[in-house]
Length: 464
Image 1 (cartoon, rainbow, N blue to C red):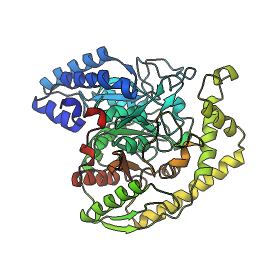
Image 2 (image 1 turned 30 degrees about the vertical axis):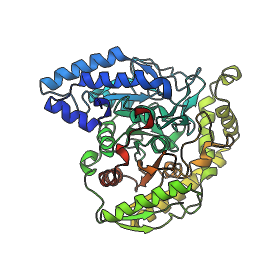
Image 3 (image 1 turned 180 degrees about the vertical axis):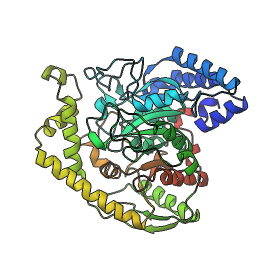
């Protein structure tokens, strides 16, 4: 075991006591990248020299008792969708590299840099982060730390593979239809999609107000710690909410006793793999033992995949709008296909999808007057073969992610935490959904579940 196996919270405690150095933690993370990145393809760029320089500066600050911020010295990676000063942002594409100058940080990147994080490099995304698995024409296929023949999920698959293997304790991902929660579930890691507007995003996503930035970690406390940092103010995002009244790291320790929690194994319409269903049912029982009132209840909405597709495919059309036929020929052809379909939608189609979204938001607002939280499986299936969009090789990624995209439609906070394993030893994720603005409550439930179980402590197969 090395410092690469420690959470950010544990690293910071070690720095404060003088028992661990940020330099050692950074070297251990870089060693993990050297050892495992070729197997899973998580990183597109590693800047070891810059990282070690930052780590040495952090070590001096800790020695003087003057850390610059709450992440000082923590090795961290950035999804290759977010702008990073000094590094390119390729968006997983040969043609879509950011036109912005390399001296600009996106808002969440700026916040983690200000907080003293050691930035290791950029991690993989499918082209324009458009699907629920991670492969791209430019960077290839990202696979799973538990089985390198399986997908890590997506679109933040590079983040989850990196965190799961100790190639940096923290990562910044994005989620417009499940893209932090999907890979967290497949890789046995933790992710939190915050209430829309909680974390600033710039430039705005072409997928509009479906898209969130979220922490990807190995523990719920680390997710809360990172969310506290990236929820900081940035004038570039006109949708940004006011600062939360209390720190999420503080709220995350409050437990679930007295809460009323709804469990919905299927949302009323999803077919779920038996191993996933079994792990979910066992996980739901934990919350009753922790003092919550647990009841079975479906939210009451129908599958919103068609209106989601209207919004999603229209966003893809906007993504590809600047590109010529010659440029599109170098892109992911499935992305080109949905973009061409998205370009056929009318304003009436778009507003109709938004009306469904509004109705779902109202319905969930009423649901959460009765229930403090909703539990579902994060995904209905285990990880499947890497390099495919769907297990069958045909259709769209939304066919196997019915638990995630509804809560992008409603803009609610939702976390995924590991809750068990299939008979083949692949991780299963538990999704915890809260009402808008209740990010702290979601993280408290995630942390309470971790404290009562051992799933988050399991080591991926590639580390054994």
